Length: 80
Image (tube, rainbow, N blue to C red; front, top):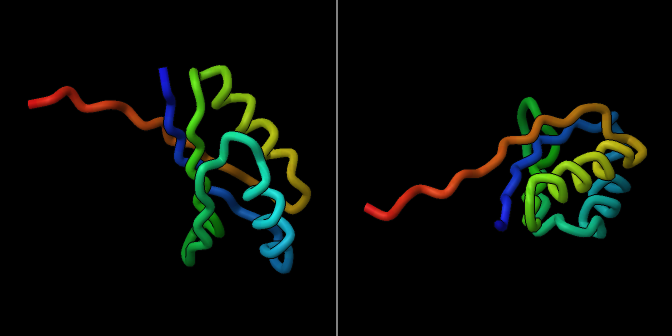
């Protein structure tokens, strides 16, 4: 089963460019958006199964400069 996770990422000020480069090369990350507000980035993670999502988020948290994350797991809506 394909799982889509939306991970909200905060980084230490001044590390945005290096974190962006690291995140875009991380396997399982489909898209990175630089945003303004409470979070610095939104990472869209597209993987097979929850264990793989957990693994990608664990690796994302290990990126130098990442200070915190919050992941929201997408759910499929049944057809009307």
